[in-house]
Amino acid sequence: MPGHYGGQPAYIVNPRTEHKQGKDALSVNIAAAEAVAKIVRTTLGPKGMDKMMVNSVGDIVLTNDGAMILKGMDIEHPTAKMIVEVARTQEEIAGDGTTSAVVTAGTLLDKASELIEEGVHARVLVKGFENASEKALEILNEFAIDVTEGNREALEKIASTSMSGKASETNKEILAALCVDAILQISKKGSVNVDNDIILRQESGKGVDETEILDGIMLNKYRVHPGMPKTVKDAKIAIIDTPLETQKTSNTSKLQISSADEMQDFLAREEDEFKQMADHIIQSGANVVMCSKNIDDKVAHYLQKSGVMGIRRVSDDDVRNLSYATGANIVKKVFDLSEEDLGHAGEVGEEGESTVAKIFIKKCENTKVITILLRGSTEHVTDNLERAFDDALHVINSVFEDGKIVAGGGAAEVEIAQRLRNYASTIGGREQLAITAFADAVESIPMAIAENGGMDATSVILKLRNAHVENPNIGFDVYSGDYLDMVEKGIVDPLRVKNQTIRSASEVATMILRIDDMMRAQKKDMMDVKPEHNIHNYNRPF
View: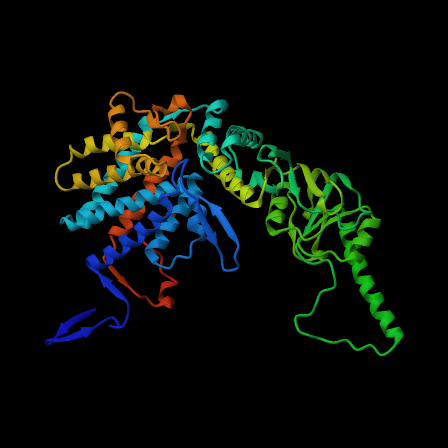
């Protein structure tokens, strides 16, 4: 970045440092955002295509879930990373709509690029996009339909729409009903904690229709010792996050034993250490031990003699779930364990035989927790099923908490676009071009759905525009090819998902349009910088 002094350039930034300015910086950023959007665009809708993701060791994931695809991509460009952050924010706040948010943002920037080439300043576009975003949210709220908590049919339709194209289509209605059952079981006065109160487990080798809801927490584990009780009523649970075995030294060491007596003495001390561990656990009052690491056979022997059930190598996620559900404290040192650290459950039991057995923790004292056991013919099927269930549970929760839905099948997007174009005509100056571009970007969602279904997207959009003159709920059924009232058809989406899609896309697009300079910064000076704009900060109410 040279200045000029006495006719000579004065460099204030290392000339060898990567540096882009003005339209060059903007075009590079827009191109990066569009590239990410194009990758996931083909996955949109019930007939969207799948992506195959292969990691360095050859593991394969087949999915059309936008959040999963973007999370797994190895992205380097900083602007592309911002688009991925949009997807993550969308997933965290709304639970679904990640692909729509990214595609809308990409199209919004594409339209902005065209207007900039025509001479419209980026700052005008930013103002227009922000204005259009606020108007779009206002239109959505007017367009929304109220849903009561007891309207089970509407909740099932929401779940079914979310699962379209992600899970087994032949069992979609059954799976949607299971999602609603799960939400209703854990609801507490209209409040639901999906992430903590519902645990998803997979079991391949069976049919999808055998998926079921289980009371409590299920672990794919079995007792350490067959002599331990198979069922423990009124369970007092100790959660220990350290090995119940002889601790190894951090450095390589040797112990020299020169006689049989010394050997006997060493074994006796080791035996005594194992017994002390077991005795301390027993004295705390625990009758069930969940250990995240190994439990030595000798410790297991002493626990078994006192009627204590032991489970070893419990995963970190399961340890957190158990702590949350039972109220147990996670203890890092076994000799720090006390009665106050114990959690409580009505029953802990093992079902099944040998290594195929499962442990169930039921009637948890701290909160009601359920497990959904997802079944499918292969691991790929259950993986996709888990992603579909995760999205469906979160969108049902959104409707459960907000009580509002909108028509799906592209109806909401077309209605927003129609009204935004009418609104743009009332705005003077070049800002109306930005609002019209925003309308086109919103309408890119039904266009992508139609394209992915093998339809003529332009023809579909024109017919939808004409139909919306009479009925704003008319959408496109990609399966039948008909133009129907989506609310009557039962194809609906949560208002929160649509609201957040508009916010996410608008926020990242305006953020990128404000950038007119890109340079390589020193890492040590970036650590303390608090950015002015942060796509995670959404303090506005839904």
